[in-house]
Amino acid sequence: MNTPDVVLIVDDVPDNLSVLHDALDEAGYTVLVATHGEQALQRAAQAQPDIILLDALMPGMDGFEVARRLKADAQTAAIPVVFMTGLTETEHLVAALAAGGVDYVTKPLKPAEVLARMQVHLGTARRARSQAQQALQARSALDAFGYASMTVRVADGRILWQTALARRLLLAYGDSPGDAGSAAVGEALRHWMARQLDGVLQGLAEPPRWVLVAPQPVAGSDRRLVLHLHPPMEEGQGGELLVVMREESGSAAAQLLREAFALTAKEAEVLFWVAQGKINRDIADIVGSSPATVKKHLERIHAKLGVETRTAAAALALGRLRQGG
Image 1 (cartoon, rainbow, N blue to C red):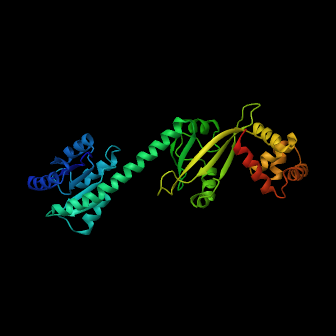
Image 2: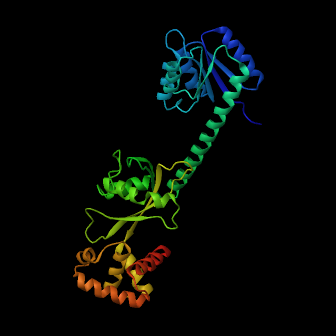
Image 3: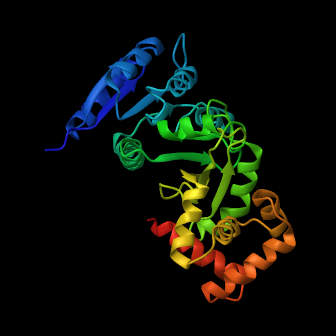
């Protein structure tokens, strides 16, 4: 059996309360009433109604101020507010919507119209709650299974949510991706997301990846942080992207490539960095060689892998690394 929706009616005129109360009660709703602003805020916080019918003009705290306070409180911000008003001037209707109202009905009230408007907004609120619950469940699962993940708003790079492991990794890698306690991800990550956004939202087979090396690595350690950019977790949230990160060891990965493709240690190291998108000059600096020597290693790598291009070699290497040991 479904639990009836709870409606809070806020009006300082007893006759209005009576008419609406009877109509909503007959329609199967659980009805609460408040006759002034402070009482409305208290009832809303305590009962968490599914929708609020709010009189715009009341003595003391008017409906506009009540709505603003409801929307400013995290406990009540998601409750849809429908204004009841005898004011039809555009400026008043705009004020009602600006205060957080989703709709308005004009007085004298017609119960059938009020019911119809309510049903529309209750349906929208239910879908929003369902999507929020699904997102929370998905995020809880990521956290529970030890995934390092975060959601980032594309517009400004702000971290909206992150797992505990993601927070630790971001702190460990310092300012490269951005401090986990700060309001925004680093500028480099924002630029990377912007470049990759179109492809991600078009559903690329493989999510774009970005490799970060710790700015102050521990002596003897060559661990690095690999970030994968995914489409949004929730449909309709195109402005938010999911970033999944994984810490890995370059030497372990190079050893895997060495064994998989019968490479020398140096060739495996070069191939690993080719797969990370590094150019020959950068690879030379990393492995302590010259660009010309790196080029020779790459030629031998192509021959052993049976490919002709750098891109093909990188694709084979990434495929093997994804398979793991």
